[in-house]
Image (cartoon, rainbow, N blue to C red; front, side, top):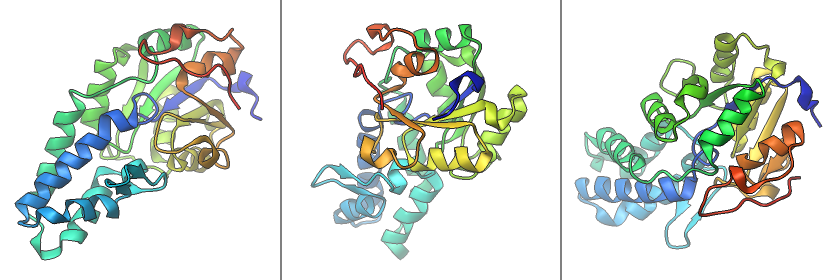
Length: 258
């Protein structure tokens, strides 16, 4: 188990960590796939596109290791183009990105009381950042929507020049921005790509959360510790008494971590 007293910075994944993955993104992926398949003249191929990227719409099941769960937008787009082959519309990428941006602006559900949580983390002296395989523009918008922009020392996306996860680039860029050494930083995320980035960057810890595509048993081999949600970070990091104050109003996080 890491020595939490040595951790001075927290780098958060976005989707499935700060915001509920399924509520925000599964509907957007379905809408985008349907529209692109129609543009291709093959509406029946939408389900195959989703399946190729990890989501079985008929079973409502998402593979935790899939492109939809942890890949970049470009990886997703390339896979969809591969499924459609020569029928793929020229504007496939534009349709996908426009749909994702529009949907994310209306369907964002936080996984905790983010302003309160981030304020308490900053009061405790932690430097905070966001590193997502989504685009930088959406990451910035999400931080503003969640009212946590002022608490973030660093926000980046896979298109910002640091590479995507699981590569170390975004993690090392966070260290360069904050002046922290890698071993002083913990990555907080919901997929193996997050933990792999943390290991590649030499981070001191990787914290998994169960608010994304992967359940605890899938996350456990990859992370030092797995929490039900980021709402439990105060209890983990400085033994604050478990409280519902950090939880979203519509839900309550579990009172245990493992």
